[in-house]
Length: 199
Image 1 (cartoon, rainbow, N blue to C red):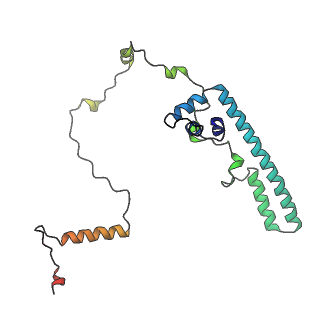
Image 2 (image 1 turned 60 degrees about the vertical axis):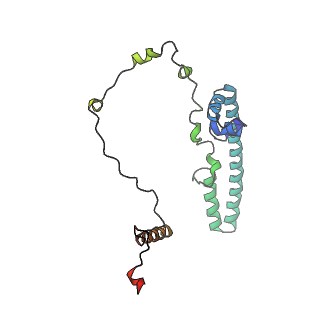
Image 3 (image 1 turned 45 degrees about the vertical axis):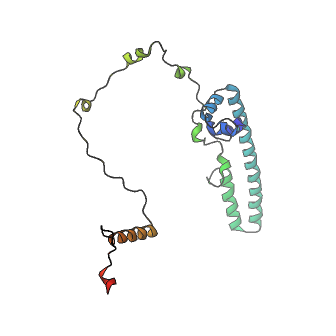
């Protein structure tokens, strides 16, 4: 199942999840599995077979479209012939159409699949030996900026963030009504009646 998902251009993590591995360590499991040569060979075989099937389907469709073009020209249906020629060009990949994804299947990899073709580098997993933790610290270059040497200054507080949404009409009316009702309530708790309403 993992190999089939990878061959369908899913990332390693998603392929591991679909194969039944735990979602918690799916990314690591996918990377580990893709590091095994037998799995890489199987994925390449599945991709080749998938590509061959797609090409066979494209060839069949192109033959049918050729027949449609021939019959449309015999019946002098030029608009049908023109649409069939356009479809033939799309099927052959001359004209790219986002509604026909299979003519370029496998050409674009999944965004998470960018590391699957790289060879494993064992030196990346080497940790500093526990008996020499300060050895690497001595080798590191110390960098000090001029701004680090200045005395601490109090920075002005940043302004309040601007809301990322604009309230709709209903929300604006509710806020306006709330503000007006607050204006009619004095601090002493008694309701203030507007002058126009007293008459």
